[in-house]
Image (cartoon, rainbow, N blue to C red; front, side, top):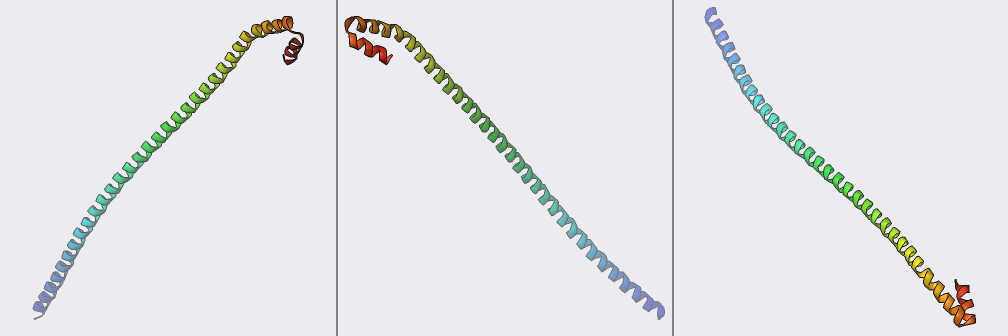
Length: 125
């Protein structure tokens, strides 16, 4: 009788161990599936992060290029403004040089043609 009860106890212990083993196997499979899902999610997040980083780098590069273009346009504009002012000064100088003989001629004419007008002209000059 004690051999039978020992046998039943061992059978019960074996069945309990098999149930625990089955539960552990299910838990392990569930854990592996959760790990695979987490790994896939992490890979997706990494891809999105990489894409965002690349987009940010591209935007930064485009902003730098635009800033360089603005600076260059500003330099070109400043150079053009300077050259226009310089040409204006040169034209005014040339005009003044061209007008001096004309004013001298007119002054001499006024001096010979009428007295008080010549004085007015020399006062103006």
